[in-house]
Image 1 (cartoon, one colour):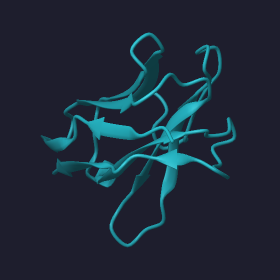
Image 2 (cartoon, helix red, strand yellow):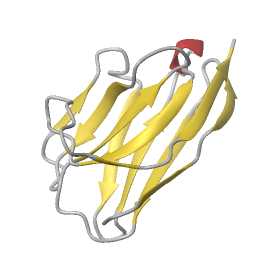
Image 3 (cartoon, one colour):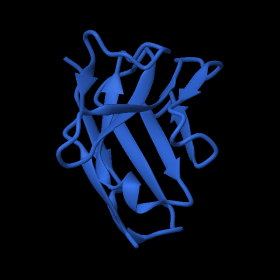
Length: 119
């Protein structure tokens, strides 16, 4: 089974930026995406991109601030976060097999990386 490993999380002030990365252990021929889970809340969809990069979807709460991208030659997917807000604080998870409507039926998940935005 493919394994996913996230990196790039950290502590940043409001208005700052971060770049999250997710490395897959094998070549991926599926949509890849990002979810996040804040304390006391359910995991929520953030962004997804198709294998060929032609289709991309974002949650309304991050549109215009977050950008998903992937490098299929390196089996990686990235999430660029800018204009961060305290409400973006969460554990961010990389997911393989995300549908373009943001749902996951049989996704493979990474372990997550913590993003903390201070006010």
